[in-house]
Amino acid sequence: MSEQEVTEYIESQDEPKRSTLLAMRASILEIEPRLEQSFAWKSAMFKFNGKFVAGLCAHKSHISYSPQSADVMTALADDLAEFVVSKASFQVASDAPLPKSLLTKLVKARMAELEG
Image (cartoon, rainbow, N blue to C red; front, side, top):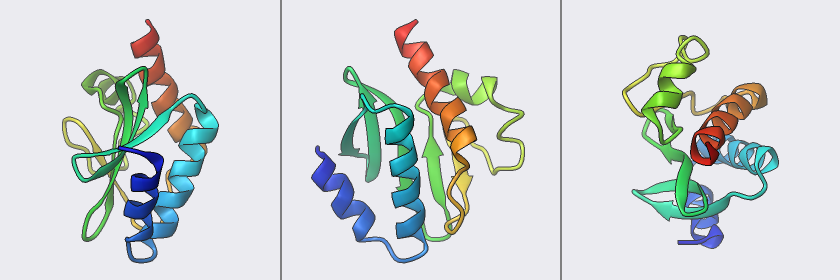
């Protein structure tokens, strides 16, 4: 469970998923530099004080982003209206990283939940 495993996972993906995952990982770590990277549930995971903040997983035709909180999903429902959403995650196009503004909302909402 380490940054190296996350890097290996991302590097093993085909393009354009690899570039999208790399861009999203870079943005997440810029937004919240205290996050630790780990690999769990076949996903790149980001944790704070041992609790999950975000997850990225490559699938055949998309990438999924999980804010690790149904409450965050509900609170940001308007921001996620254009995405295919499930209870705990939503689909991101393989060739289009999430805008940093949306990633910021997602990460900050989860961090506030954990720190609250």
